[in-house]
Length: 530
Image (cartoon, rainbow, N blue to C red):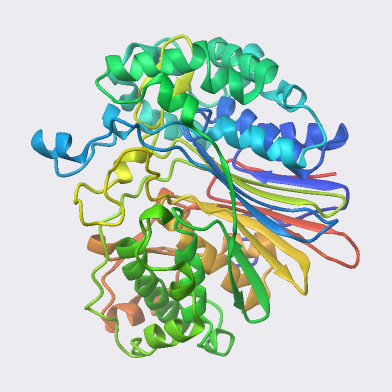
């Protein structure tokens, strides 16, 4: 079970990139070898992933990041998520008879924040110019790249979403999804990236690109205007943090679900998981119950912080965690937890970069579901995300749709420090699986002393609410039957399925500077070091 994926951890000293697609990781490595730092490499990797995995990420989506620079040791958080339009109207949709915002509706489009995030993080921490770090992505888009195995499968699964507008053909090969090994070119996206390389974020949010986005969204019936595009800005925010057995765990604060992972860790910290045993029945039961309790709060309270009525500090207090922990029966699953009904569409990319100086960037860039709304702005190669479908059409809810408001986000990059030194830069993409993945890989490394690759190889659970609990069929039969006996509604799914997320981890030894990377066995990706 140590390396059931047949992957061993990757080790290096000069720098490392770990992400869902090897060509994306190589873009970051090229930048590191050319004198860039971890932040430069992160933007290069994100842009390259826009090309080689366009169904999951891109300039039409949003960005969140955590950065830790070695010279000062401070962890900072970037929120480059977009807001709803000034004209967004909950009443308008309710009067149309809607009770949810369709994930393929133009109403689901919020201003795409990714490019503002690329610019903001480069301006503050980068060593190179934006034009230099975008070169690999532009080359992939212009010259073409071979489509990888698992991404091709997901492309096929999501291709139907491209039927809603004429620009969708730009994401297909002769009208069909590209098969593994097919060489795919995206000249319109290459031109968009060239425009951004030459003019920066200003060229995206003001001028022809913004006009094309706004005109297309309005033509499709949505609200976004050029004024909404020009209004957008990224923000540096105070990261959220909690301690877990002497390790400081960092997340981007609301509107992300970062608190979800931290609250679950707070609850789980009160149990001796190591004594229960790795992959044991009791460990699974207590982790699952901790996660369920955390979800119960997150779906009720987390939203744009300007609209929350509960402080993050209250949700993260150890005292509050103790009251929640007391609700867990070691012999029986709880029946009374009634969280909301979040979506579950794991189309996101996560990447982590650490350079030889110990600078780290934990970075997530997403269009949410496969190709976002499926609406591609003609002649741009921009698939517009559908994050606005996360808004609630209940005016009393903290996450209710409102003008120029950020929706609840599942996206959460993670970072861990210990004794004021970088310990790990990590993430697990996959919608509401993200916080669950964070809980499980941190527990694997901290409680059970697993290396990054072992932590990712391990079987996972997924709390699915109305669908019960999914377990990968790598989990032993004894654990499955034991959880069922405790009252958990268990469904066993194929190993390495899309339900269990996709993670990347880079750890750093503060004494030797050795980087140890792990990459998700459930994806095409790789950890690459030099």
